[in-house]
Image (cartoon, rainbow, N blue to C red; front, top):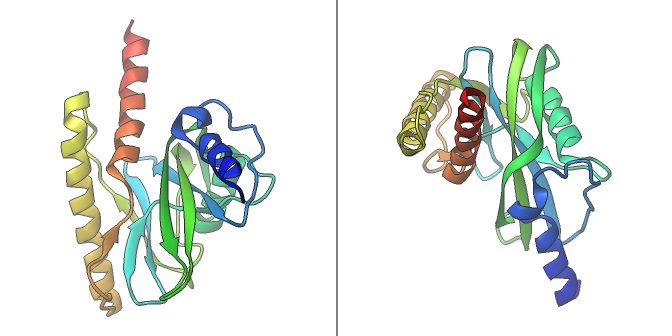
Length: 211
């Protein structure tokens, strides 16, 4: 892929170009992995995470999601991933736009070739039903983590730190119960910028309704 192609791809999946354009088919490319992740709030307002143990023994807490398949939009891809990972006994509303997109680089295995990855975080709200661990061979558990709803923009950061601490504590209890010792510290893989964008959007919406 030439330099001009790389520039175009980065622009295509930048934060500014994603919003409101989820019906565009997402191109697949060998040199970049496109992912979606659902910021799912359940019926009680808790945020839903999956606990994964990776091949190297490390354990992570992350939003449900996965790689976008060719021809899928962000919305359809997110719906498919939620059904695969959280079971089909729920009705979850998926926003029509990504809240924020995060680019990084990862390695598939020790010594493996580095690959670019772009993850689109999408806001979701469960209206009916319940979630369960639909992939027990891939996930250790599903967590429903309480979130103190921030009432102002300034309170978002404190709410994120509290939720992260709750998630890590809940995961530790699950691992202890399962008798699993992770390789290193448990990683919390929800970027603060994605959480912040989600609640900024919600607060902005509530303010608009009051006007």
